Image (cartoon, rainbow, N blue to C red; front, top):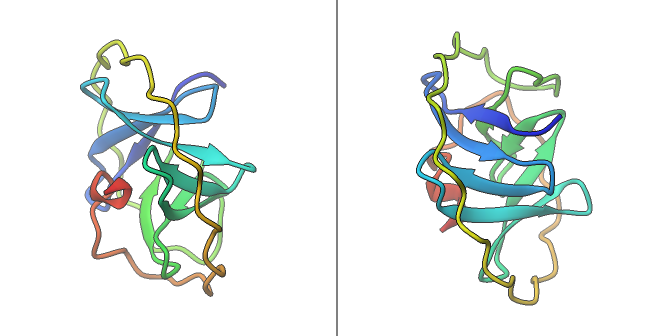
Length: 122
């Protein structure tokens, strides 16, 4: 799979995960990356969350985003996703900072994160 769209709690297409494990928004701005196939980091080296079964979770185990391939449990009921827009050409990613040691993984919840999908990377 090349580019995978992730949607927020309202089914709005927000971010893309490319084939190299990098996240960028619909405007092509780099947000972060996946490390060790599960840890989500921003480019400042901050651990921001997890991705499992194509579900993005915050540091508290709440769901921040999902894709059409999502299959992780537990999770909230996903809305019908909108048709994604044509994304902008992604910027050249910055050199990542040294990543912090990841947090202890929390118990997954059925709830939505209070943090928006794009704010997860701040």
